[in-house]
Amino acid sequence: MSALLAIPSITPRLLPVLRRHFLVWRKLAAPSLLANVADPLITLVAFGYGLGRLLPEVDGVPYITFLAAGSICMSTMMAASFESLYSAFSRMHVQRTWESQMHAPLLLDDVMAGEWLWAALKACLSGLAIIGVALALGVTHAPTLPGVLPVVLLTGLAFAGLGLCFNALARSYDFFSYYFTLVLTPMTFVSGVFFPVSQLPEALQWLAMALPLAAAVELARPMVLGEWPPTILRPTLVLLAYALGSFYLAMVLTRRRFAA
Amino acid sequence: MSEPVLQVEGLRKSFGAHRAVDGVHFRVARGECFGLLGPNGAGKSTTLKLVLGLMVPDAGEIELLGLPVPARAREARARVGVVPQNDPLDPDFTVAENLQVFGRYFGQKDAVTRARIDPLLEFAQLGAKRDARIQELSGGMKRRLTIARALVNSPEVLFLDEPTTGLDPQARHLIWERLKRLLAQGTTIVLTTHFMDEAERLCDRLAIIDHGRPIAEASPLALIRREIEPHVVEVFGPGRAGWASQASALADRVETVGETSFAYCTDPGPLLASLQARTDLRTLHRPGNLEDVFLKLTGRDLRD
Image 1 (tube, rainbow over the protein chains, first blue to last red):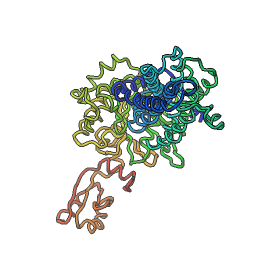
Image 2 (tube, rainbow over the protein chains, first blue to last red):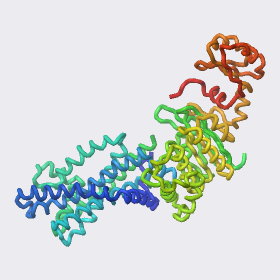
Image 3 (cartoon, rainbow over the protein chains, first blue to last red):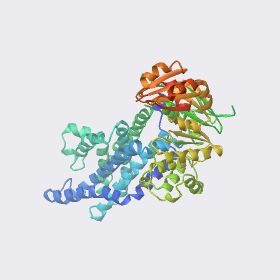
Image 4 (tube, rainbow over the protein chains, first blue to last red):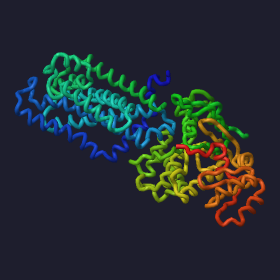
C-alpha cells in the first residue's frame, strides 16, 4: 500500500526517456509542428478577424488581441493533453515502450516523469508557436510577453498530469473522447478564452476560479496586453496544485494499473 | 550446484481470488540454461515478472545475482537482459537506433553502445538491416533484434519469454543456435516455453509448473527417465478403438487422445508383434520424450 502511495521519484534517470521522445519527435517534427500551429492559428485568425470585425472592443482592446492570450493557453492545454493521452497510451499500451524501458533498469516513476515533462515541454512549444504567430501578426509586442513563458510551462505540466491520470484509467483510445468532450471543451468556455469570465453567471465565475485553464488565462492575458497580472499568487497556486497534484494522482493510478 | 544466479523460494502471487503463482521455487546455476515450462496460464509470465521485480509478490524470497528482489531489483535488472513476448521494439527508430536508445536506458555511454552495435547486429544476422525500419523486418528478424537489444548491456543472465513462439522452423533453428552460442560464452539463460523440443534441446534443467504450482524440477533426461517408460508406440487408423481395448495387456499403460492411442512400455516386442499384421492401423514407435512427461504431469485437457 505504501509503495502505491509513495511520493514519485523524479531523478536524472528520466533523461534517457525524455531524449527518446525528443528523437522520435525530431523525425516527425514538421507535421507535428504544423498541427500544433495550424489549429490555433485558424481559431485566432478566423475568430479574431472575422468575429472581431463584428464586435466592439473587448475589455478595451481589439478582439484578436483579447483572444491571443486565450489561444496561447488553449493551445498549450490541447498539446499537453494529446501527448499525455493518445501518445502516452500508444507508448504504454500499444507499442509497449514502457515495458521495454522497465526491462532496462528504469522504474515506472522514471518512465512516468519522462512522459510528464515531455508532454509539458511539447506543449510549451505549441504555446510558443502561438506567441510567435501573435508577434508576426502584430497582435502584440508587449514587453511583459516573456512573463507568459512560465505560465505556459505550468499549464503544460498541469494538463500533462491530468492527461496521465486519464491515461492510467483508459482501456482504449475511445475513452479519451469523453475527456475532450466532457472536460476540456466545456473548460475552454468557462475559462475566459473566448470571452471574459465576467460574462458568466456568478456560480460559473466561482467555478472558473478553481480551473487550471482559467488560472492560466488570468495570468497570461494581462502580460500579452503589456501589464503585470493584478493577482499573481492565487492563480499561480491553482496551476501549481494541478501540476503537482495531478502528477501524483497519475502516478498512484498508473502504479495500480501496473500491479494488476 | 555451483553458485546460483537466481534463487526463488515459496513465491506466491494472487490476483483477486486467482492464485497465479502458488509456492513456486527453483534455483538457476551460473552458466546453465534453465527452462520454465507450463501450459498456457500456468503462471510462467507472472513468475518472470516477479523475478524481475516488475511486480511485488504476496510472499516468497527472490535473489537475483545475489541481490534481493524487489528491494534491489533495479540494480539486478541493470545486469540482466529481457526478451519479452511480441517484440516491443520502437517502430519510429531504425534497427541501429533501437539499440542506441536502449543502451541509454542503462545509463551506458553512447560510445560504449556504439561499439557494441555492429557485433550485436552481426550476432543477430541483421548486419544488412542496420538502417532498416522495424516495419521492414520479418518476424524472425524482429525477434533476433529484440534479443540483440537485450544484450546491449552485456548481461550476465538473459531472460526470454517464449522466444520462438510464432516463428517458422528456419527462424526457430537460427534462434536456438544463437542461444547456444550465448551459453558457450558463459551467459546464463532462463526461458519460458511450451515447446517441448525447444526445452529438450536447450535446457540443462527445467521446472514444470501448472496452476501456479511447481510439479517437477530436474534435467530433461532425468525427468523422462523418471516419469516415462522408455518406449512409446503411437497408434492411429480406423481399427484403433478395437485394438486399444486389448493393447493394455501388452503395455504398461495406454492413453488415448482424440484419434491417437499412446502405448507406453518397457519392452515393446509383444506390442509391436501384435501390430505387425494390421493393415488398418498406422504406428509410430519412438523413445519417450519431454512432451510425454509434460502431458503426463499437466494432463491432457485443453487449456485456453
